[in-house]
Each structure stands twice: as C-alpha cells, then as structure tokens.
Image (tube, rainbow, N blue to C red; front, side, top):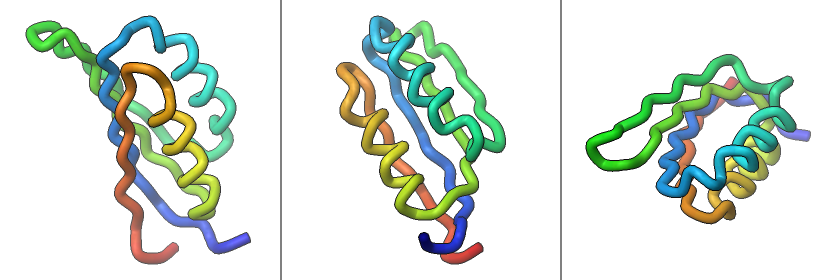
Length: 83
C-alpha cells in the first residue's frame, strides 16, 4: 500500500434521500476521517459536506468513488502531494 496522504473531499448532496447511504460510507471509512463539516444551503436546496481524510491514495480514491456513485451526490477530492 502507498504512503498516507492528506485529502479534502467536497461533497454536494442534491438528493436528501441519499443521506443514509452517505452516512454509511462515512462510517465505513471512519478510521481514516480526521474531521468533517456539513452545511445546509437551504436557498439552493443542497447540502455541502467537506471531509478531511488521512489515508493511502487507493483508500481515498475508493472513498470518493463510492460517494460519487450515489444518486444525487457529487464528490471531488484534493490530495496533498506527499505525506
């Protein structure tokens, strides 16, 4: 496995029906999550979540992919260059 990297994943939730599935993914990767912040943007009818994660790149990619494959959810990640 590659060395751990710090990453920030931005998640935009347009379908609140996906909330339970999002929480399941967050729980699945909980050992790698340093912190998260969620903000409801009621004017636009979306929720914005930022998650800071410290994990190998493969784990970060899997985390982002699982989130991004959920209906009504967009997820993108920015990673540090190194540990």
